[in-house]
Structures are given as C-alpha cells and as structure tokens.
Image (cartoon, rainbow over all chains, first blue to last red; front, side):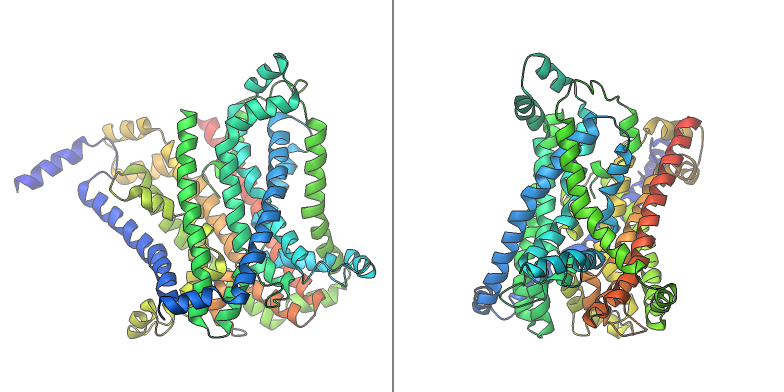
Length: 286
Length: 292
C-alpha cells in the first residue's frame, strides 16, 4: 500500500507526461516486442535458413560460379554508381545551399522524384528510352550498342534510384553551417579548389560518407528497377538480389538464403557505420 | 530517409540567410553539372514514359488502365498500402516516443535497427517474410493454428509494405519530438491539465506535420513496393496482384504501351501525393509559426 502511495505522489509531481513507471515499462516493452518480431527475428531467420543444411553446403553455395559472378557484377554496379552520385550530390548541394537563383526550389523537389517513383516504373522508363524500340535505343542499335538487358542498363537505373542520397544528406547540413568560413578562406586568398578541400570538405565529410554508405547500400540491393532492365541472364546480367530471386524461384531455398546472408551482412554493416558516423557528426558539431 | 533530410526544409532555410552569392565560386560549374545530370538521369527517361503514353489514343489508354484485372490490383494495392501506412503511424509514433523520452538498456540498438528495412535489400526482405509466414514458417505455424493465413494473401502484402516503410514515421517524428519545448508541457501540467489534454493540445499539434509526412511517405513507398511484396503475395490475378507487378506482367507480354499506361497512373498518383504533402506541410508550419 505504501508503495502505491509513493508512486501516486510521484505522478502528481511529474514534469512530463508518460513518465509513470507502469506506462513507461509498458511502452518500452511494446517497442522491444515490435522491433524483435518485425526486425530481429527476420534477420535471424535469414542466417538460420542459410545455415540450415550445414556449414559445408553454405560454402558450396557461396562459391558457386553463378553466385560469384553475381557478387562481381553487383560490386561493379556499386563501384560505378557511387562515385557518379557522389560528384553529382556534392555539386547539387553546393549549388542549392550557396546560391539563390530562380528555380532553386524546383530543383530541390526534382531531386526527390526517385524516392516517389516505384522502382518498376523507373526501370520501365529506361527501357522505353534505351530499349530497342525507344528513340535513343533504336539509334544505339544501329551503332551496335546495347544498353538494356546488359550491365550498362543496370548501372543506369541504379544511378537513377540512388541519386538523391548524397545530396539529401549534404543539403540540410550545409544550410545549417552557412558559408561564412568559406568566404573567410576566399578573402584570405584561397583558390576555389583550396577552399573546397580545406574548408568545405572537412566540414561535411561525415555527412558525405554517410550519403555514400546509403547510396552503396541501395545500389547493391536494388531489385525492382534492375529486374526490369536486366533480362536475368545467369552468369551475365544477374546481380546478387536477382540471383536471390532466381534461386528462390528454383525452390533452392538454402541457396537463396545463402546469397541473402551476404546482403544482410552488408545491411548490418551499413547500420553499424551509420551509427558510428552519426556519432562522429554529433562530436564534430559540438 | 534520415532525420536530417526530412526535417521541415523551410524551417532550416528560413533560419539563415544565403550571403555572399557574388563571392563564392562555382555557380556556373555546379549549375551546369546539376542540370546536365538531372536532365539526363531524371527528366529524359521521364519524358520517354510521357511520349510512349501520349502515343496512345485516349480510348486505348482508358481501356488499359481500367481493365478489370488492373482495377483489382489498384484496389488491393491502395487498401494494403493504406493499412500498412496507418499501422506504421502507430508503430512509428510509439517507437519515436520510446526512443526520445525514455532511457533504457538496448535503446541504441533499437535506434540503429529501425533503419534495417532501408538497408536490407527488398528481395531479401521478401523471401524472408515469405518463409517466416509460410505454413511451415516460424510465424506461419502459429498463425495457422489460429486460422490466419498471411503468406500468399493480401495480408502478406500488408506485412511486406509495413516492413519496408517502417522507418519513415519514426525518422520523421523523432527529430521533431526531440525539439519539443518541454516548457509548454510543464506549464500545461502545472496548470492542472490532464495528461490526455496535454497530449492532444500541446504535443500532438507540434508532431502532426511530421507524423502526416511520415505516413504519406510510407504510403507512397508502399504504393510502389515491388521486391518485398511479390514473394509473399502469391500474385493471384484479381486477388493478390499489386499494381507494380501488373506493369511487370505487361512488360513480359511485351505490351510496352499497356505497361507505360499503368505506370503513368501510379507515377502520377505518387508525384501528386508527394507535392501535395510538401505544400501542406509548408502551409501548416507557417500557420503554426504564425500562431505563436
């Protein structure tokens, strides 16, 4: 009874709502339940399925030549996509945060389009333009160039899907920081490049890296857009996510989940790096 | 996508002034590169879709987009996306509340895990959920005893959409909740307001724009979701086919015109929603600022 009383008196002195112990415990418990069942269990299931036939089979599946090829192609796509979007993201962020000009807001809205467009629609748009029936595609055909159903097409749609990430990380940060440091560097006689390398880059490096990590994660894992333009040719145009699908459709569940563990491991690594970068960002801000 | 990127943009840009536009270098270069990139990567392909669709007669277009199988796909996509994003509103609000207002062991881990659906490829999420909810799966077995089937039904579509769009509400609401002025809350409480009143009159109005934004973003994402959905949906015509799958089906029939027509419908729906929610948020924030 006395316990009950003290907790009651606490409640009446509380400064914030929701701080009652029972409510607190209930809500935290619910959060754990939700995160556990929606996120942690699926994550465990991926690894459990992959290893369900034993470690030996896991290695056999992993070193399968089509799996290795899919890994290689996926790395190639990421290696081409990330630098392109990195450069674009930095220029776009510089443009919209350091200059006022008509159309600035429109530009900032346009960059969000890939977030709103269904990946399948994105793939279709590229197929229509660069496929053999498209007006650019038919010209390319005449010159014996095939972009769709080949790796260049996969890179192109991946660039589309991932182009907002770097810019979206940089823009709010660069707006907050303002340009006074850069102006100071210029007035002290720095060239544009020196200013960028010595002042801008150190200020944005963590956010930039974070944007790169997000771009990379999405580039490696993109499925819908890539499956439209890939043609799914095993050992040729199969990226790792497409390979997962192919094995799954073949009822090779263990094989599908083996390839999936690679992608899941990368996702976990992304989360770790992200947490670290956010922490560094806070450190350098304070 | 992330807390910083989904902060009300206007608030940030209003709070500082761009200075020295004559001083800083690189305007022409960055404008040139940005415009070139946006034209080539975004606008040119978009125009390809428009050209393809514009080439159809209105009657053909109408026939394709109102085909009964496609209509069924709109219905199941819209309903499940609506259900998933509203559920996400609740789940996201709860997670944001717990992460911002309480300290407890494991908090950092939960905070990091919330982004998993964005980091995990959708195809992996798809096969994992399909396996978990299948009749022999960890979840499916238990649910089967209760007579609930999730895999290969519209309910599976909802689960997949719920998973892939989970971070949107949390990451939109979290920063706003962190910035809440605790003074208002304390004042209201000390004046004798009930918890529920404070929640409704003080906290909720401040969270509302971020919450709506998060729910709409997760709705848009769910409308277009493909990878996670197709594995668990069963993809039965008229029952569990989502609209993005219909585009894919038409493509495999080499009916590019029909695929584009259906694509133009979801593209328009997503873009209109995106612009509308942006405008709404800007107006709401202006009003909120004005009333203070």
